[in-house]
Length: 359
Ligand SMILES: *Cc1c(COP(=O)(O)O)cnc(C)c1O
Image 1 (cartoon, rainbow, N blue to C red):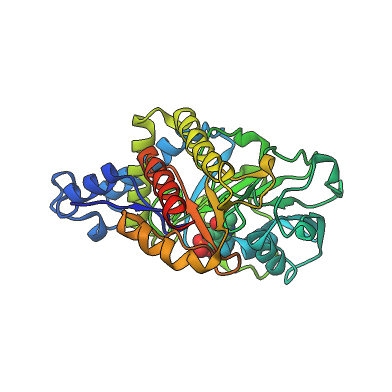
Image 2: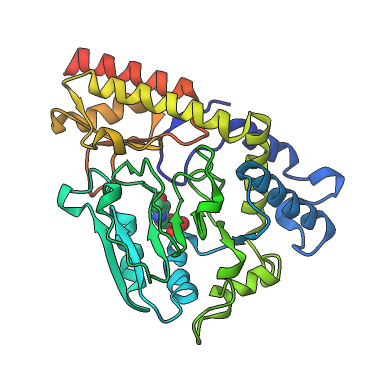
């Protein structure tokens, strides 16, 4: 088996140890004679898998007891609709606009109620986040929504906004589990799984109890948080295999020092890559230093005519999916938990060699 270093933004790399364990358990899970894919979600085998995944996630993130963990479908994008439907309660909501994903969340929320943009960095071409004192928050807002890590722009908040009595809602799709966080500072955290949790198909919502049960009339039953909250996320068939795979990732994280260790490694990985970019006149990253993402690192080459050459050479060196998002161009290295430090070292060496020979 040969495993490349895959820098895809999502679906992204999974830990090799997790893939191998899934492979070993594929045809016959734990002597059950069934693949996890073939199990009833209500059978005792699958119920134990599902419960263990939740237990491990709660332990990893230190999730307080007054929060529910929901295992859903529809991606983070479906939450863009579910959030206003469940949480607006006839009031207006504040949104912080820091890039493509916040914009999408804002666009969808506007379909359901009043949206105030409490701060925007669009005038910087989304190369930073608002300063703490630039957040123009409405003290009566139903909630405040933000995107702690913008996957496309590679921009990340170095602080957690203080939103007073308004619950803070965070789209953590590309940063969840990358380091310890204080869940109690949030009303709700949500994430599509395919970046830093597991395979696509699963969406995780961590929500404070008091925010459940206020959905607007007419909210589809599967989008009302009360439905999964009262049915252990099994009102309808959940994405069973993705949930199982997420559980294997949680177990792997726990065995590897949890989020504290992961955070230290992730910081080191990101610093190495930014140092390589900043130390060269050939590579550049446009993001303000204090707002640089640990997870998604866009960079450009001094001469865009060399992009195709760079990508082909990288592929030959076992470095995959470095092409930047179509809206930004250049390159993007997504370096989530499953990207080994060796992958960064290999990329940095490749970049230096490319610059030396072609730059
Ligand atoms: C990928 C991503 C999304 C979209 O996720 P889907 O699961 O494809 O809907 C939303 N927000 C952020 C920050 C993302 O990185």
